[in-house]
Length: 332
Ligand code: ADP
Image (cartoon, rainbow, N blue to C red; front, side):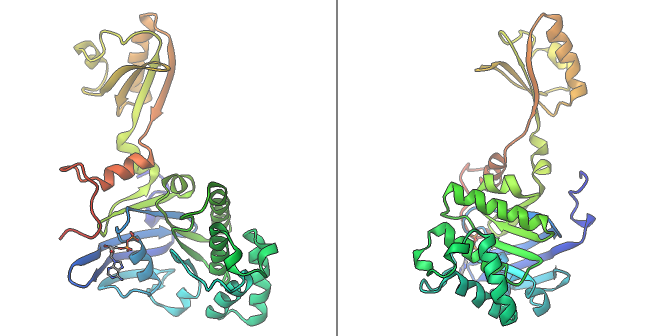
């Protein structure tokens, strides 16, 4: 593993193993989930609808009782009131009464977290300013856009000055400008030393802000690590040249110059002729470059290319035997 990728390297904010939860006899929402989130990181929880992400978050927040669970959240047993008081939680599809003002929502949340009255009034003003709703604090939520309601929800989630912030689909239905603002807020929370667990199906958002991710499918974590680690096996080396595909590509001459089977594809694309090698490093690429130069070829680009998070995600959620997306709910 690369430096910083091992969850055991730093203190853990979330350190859970063997989390299982069934709803009735038929739905196995979580099947032995292990999840390890370091303090001070933004951690992305990904998965198709029905994968069990919200159930996992609800178990952590003690809204749902698990069938089995081991480990700690913020160093304490799950459900420890002291630890819960230092978690900020923005649930998916939260619905505050529309007649409440933004300020009332934040103050109400502060009261629920036992923040003293005077303090919660001060914090409500500061937090509404912080999420860009300073001028809207005395207006009812019914006059807010979706993005504004989410920002009010975030302010409410932060009123207890949490060490761990759990955001369940925070930008669902929010327009691109609002998403960008939300993302900046999430990064700022991390920069203050807070841990953020971001549950989202917006892969670009996760790719931009998260240091590590877990992909859940049918109640199980199928991959967990940095995006670099998870895409390492797909690393390809591309050499783009001018002109046609060299005849020796794919022949025994090419095989001698590189590890067997490493030439993946060779084809003409917009920018030139693209030779794609799998698992090649810079040193191993040199003989190929030498040969190309000897032949008078112009090398336009040499670059390492990896699978995107979207490719990785699609691979994780697709059944390799049928080519179909896995259905929600765990297979036995
Ligand atoms: P996600 O957040 O990844 O979309 P969920 O945790 O909401 O997934 O759901 C996981 C599975 O559990 C799904 O099959 C869902 O239908 C089921 N489920 C969730 N909540 C309940 C519930 N309260 N009662 C019965 N089944 C539920």
